[in-house]
Image (cartoon, rainbow over all chains, first blue to last red; front, top):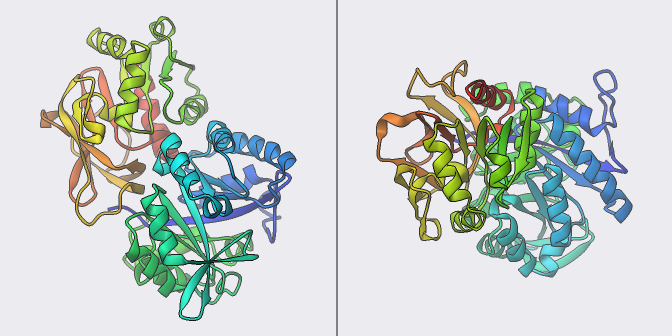
Length: 251
Length: 201
């Protein structure tokens, strides 16, 4: 049986992990390679690295980080943040990442998705969708959640799947940072609308939240950041809990 | 030295990194003259069968591989590198290398395709060399829309369930292949690569 995946997300700026990393006693808190190793040993199924400033200088540093991680960590990882051309994708993949995550550039030019998947394969292209409830539906936001595109999240999810995307990283902007649980309804609706895997993101606060989104929410994977970084929840404990609740997990 | 075959597809870096990690000398090349010198060959691959065969042929690697395998050189195919060994793939209706009798079919039914993530491998041949020291039902990382159907069922060394059981590992004489990515399957994957490398000496 295909296992549900647990994915920690690390925000990287200038080659250092930023935002609420509280591992001081365990590892160098800002070193992405040390953190990647730590999460790997904790049983993370994949890692996501987000280049949060995504300036051109930063991008070169990020490539070096990717190379270092790829030499040490033998689980898949995704790199995202400001990617808007094929050459950038090529550099990241050659540096050793499995996948890239696209967001704003994909909305601005959906053909970019087709181009990227035909060059690198569907499995390589993750589309990040930041969705926010607007009336009775969910709208897609871009530019780090600053701009409402007016696009319907379900329609957009279907479109990117048709264009060849391999996976969707779905973040609920309403839930993000609240620790009140994933948006189960949004996740389930997107997951039912498409035939590619969905990674649920935003709102993880406790063990039960993961179980909910992986069962009722029909997510294929669940992502969290600060919850893991602050050590509030250990991946090994989470996986033990999920396994006890009969959720297929890699042990 | 293990030769990693570069045919313009797939993440060769991750295979190289994994071999480096286990201390196995290796090189990446797309040239017959270089690859000839290897003690074992790895055909990695992420991508489509049509493009894969086209690229192999362009560098005459199809003829080279068939000959080397016939001569008994240890060979390991990963993902697309496994699928290309068969007669035919439904992907792009591709006539493949034809080294292993059988075909490659697309997942059908109510499944998410590609299969993406960690799935377990039931070891069906306890004598399997490539799976030596690996626990039954261990998890490996898969990314595939197609799966292999060998005609010779006795070569199947491991199976995986995704809407039905399919062959995820096979072993025949000097040839072994896995549908999953050992190079991205953590310590278990590194163990499997070590098993292959040991057979190359």
